[in-house]
Image 1 (cartoon, one colour):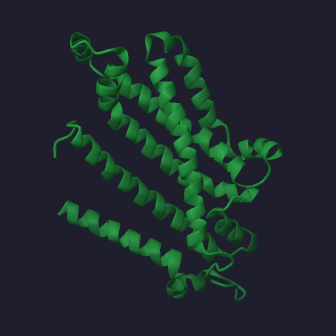
Image 2: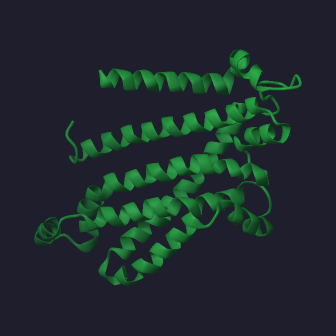
Image 3: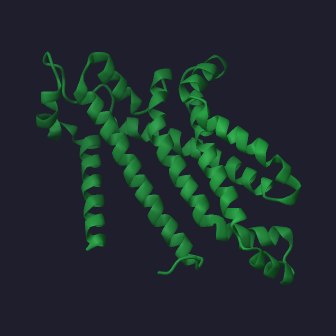
Length: 249
């Protein structure tokens, strides 16, 4: 029963997202009451599907860079040679999360210009902390007995990391990746303030023109994408962890 309800929710959310992206006019009867002074109820200045694609490109690009650095950093500080750098690495990752993305944009624009690059920098910094902390936690929770057994089998340090530690830490690493992705889907809307292509354009247009219908369209699309992508990543995580024998089928 729970599985049926979950699948129905997924289908309903996906259907609503597709309607918002490709057939928003079907919902005009619901959006029109949110407008005033005969303002348009449906955002038509740019294709919503195109804006959503640009939005996801920013998220995917930034998360990919964050994941590479955060996972490598997490591996480094959990080795004996890098343990002393854990406090510094954690402070840097925390700074990336706590420093306001708007401030990052303001600092990055003079150096990189307007467009996608300052937004990618802000999202990259924002995505470091969840992935880094989960990588560290996942690697540290590997049982010493398991590590001793790997050493007893004659594995090198690299073999032990790749064959034992990372697979056992994978569920936590993937969880951090999911959290970072959802955070960045919402945060990427600020990119439109520096001319990056994304769904923030719709929300900003609504704020400027006092058009609640535009704000609702942009907000709903971002929210539905976040929910569906988080859910999809959870399904992928379950499939991967089952495949490597960390979770029962």
